Image 1: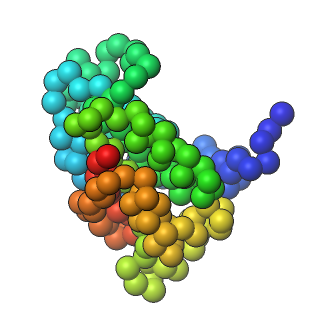
Image 2: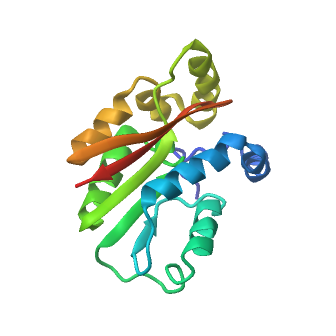
Length: 181
């Protein structure tokens, strides 16, 4: 049974197989991963949790930098770093709020969360480009990102939210946030 609320990558299942090759060639994808890696402030022995790994490119890069961090399954409990790239614009507003509340509960006292996702477009061209993402991934799910409400949702969930990178892309503006309890 399929969930009618689920929108596959690029909206149509037959296009989904193009998602990974497209992301692989998307220059901003590399820039976003670099910005997220810097924001994660990795070190040995950190407990990491990834929300929505997609093709897994960021996890692969983390494994290259910290070979011992991803070699064992995590136990239930708290994490030092929780990260997510290009996932939250797929969630409904209640889904965004519930996920962020769960992330905050799962963070260690000194931990932080890195969220890289679409942010408010910085100009008309970025708005137009992000409209294509909105059509593909759902207008209601992407609206909070387009109108700046996603920033507020992050600030409602965390005590400290800081933007560490803003990237102009062919799909709209991508922003990297570091969130602390």
